[in-house]
Amino acid sequence: MKALTWHGRRDVRVDEVPDPAIEAPTDAIIRVTTTAICGSDLHLYEVLGPFIDEGDILGHEPMGVVEEVGAEVTHIGPGDRVVIPFNIACGRCFMCDRKLYAQCETTQVREQGTGASLFGYTKLYGQVPGGQAEFLRVPQAHFGPVKVPEGPPDERFVYLSDVLPTAWQAVAFADIPEGGSVTVFGLGPIGQMSARIARHLGHRVVAVDGVPERLEMARRHDIEVLDARSDDVPAAVRDLTDGRGTDSVIDAVGMEAHGSPGAKIAQSLTGLLPDAAAGALMKKAGVDRLAALYEAIETVRRGGTLSISGVYGGMADPLPMLQMFDKGIQLRMGQAHVKRWIDDLLPLVTGDADPLGVEDLATHRLPLDEAPYGYEIFQKKKDGAVKVLLTP
Image (cartoon, rainbow, N blue to C red; front, top):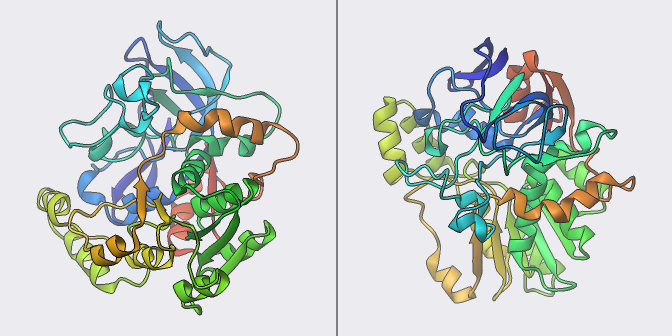
């Protein structure tokens, strides 16, 4: 089969690789019909190379049609249309019983000290072959796959794999009071959907980005926007909120924020080391570009909540603890517990109304063979790229 594989920093290629096969009675094989490039994939493209091997298959936002199931998989069968959550969870361990599926104890990567395994996401998260491919083996398929109806286009459902649950959790973790306000930093796919979900739930939303196409997309969905290139964002938000700041802030940017030149240099130098040395250094002394996080901390009102959905990977990041303590802010974060939020989201994507505008998110739809180009324009924010969908 064809699959998108990693070959080095900013070097991904479509290769011929062996077809996957059932390896355990809880496995399933799906034929991928649509898969997406995630902002988190760009961290693999740019920063996290020390934790990837050449030839690893990328991608964690797939959906498709079931081809084959193992003996213990009974809730789906061949021919069913399914979305695959990006985290791999068993549904029956201590953590899963508490709906903390991103911390599943059955698939935790204990040798790395990390949470549940993820599709297509480095040795840190199990090195499970990903979904930017023609076929995908799905472990823990007795629980994970989400069956969706026939009829509507894939674009209506594919974001249930990651974007929508991650955005819904970001809003839930933000703990916005009834009729309250939230600032969303970053208008990539997660930020766009976080803003739309918060507005759908009745909150005032201010969204921040520096890319014109992203700002315009948010405006189309009646979101107030601030241009990060020209505004003193914390001051501008205070001006909009009686001098206080918003009740909550969502950081949907993560480790590669612009405006952190020192950390960018450190990341680049680490990437030049041999993988073993670079990996050890990043796990103990890695730093992130924190410009967006610092602004988020400054923007949230006193006593408010900061919700972090953007991925961070540093182990030695300096945080303004005096300011955080003095303001008395709450902080919540983490990988999305995808299946925890499916019951909330499925009704919003199956009806005709499309209240979250899921069919107005993808800016590019490419065949799998053009995935390297998709990565390039998404990483460089070229050609108005906000979300790239791939068709194997």
